[in-house]
Image (cartoon, rainbow, N blue to C red; front, side):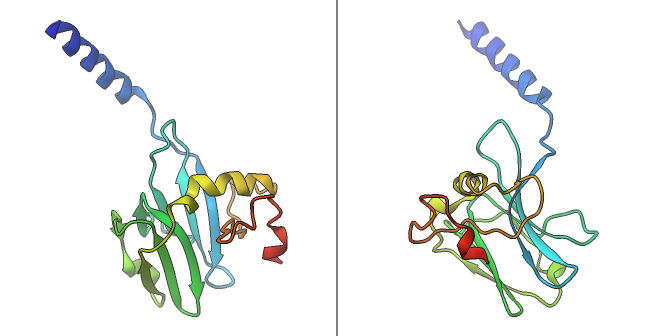
Length: 154
């Protein structure tokens, strides 16, 4: 019995090692910082639903400046970026990539508003989530229940 457990464990490790890293970005939202710079919020497609969210500046820098499993919202007001989290837990925050933008972390975000819950609302209004877009599917008062969110973004 002990040998069978070890055998299955080794097979599981081998199979997990053969699964390629996800490379397809799925965009939740982008926000304009200036005419030619934006901040993208995205996840990588994966077999597992457990994938972190990333925030990245759209310049030549290919590395994200923020990584968290608990991201629920972003918005820019004047020169401040507000990042909402459902839990005070993030893996990376590189403020040096943001230059003149101040960052504020808000930890009272709602977990229902994570990336996975936004994808259904975005697809419901015909947004291509494989490309950067400026549509926000945040619906704090249930106004997205009928997927008619387009009037909120005009």
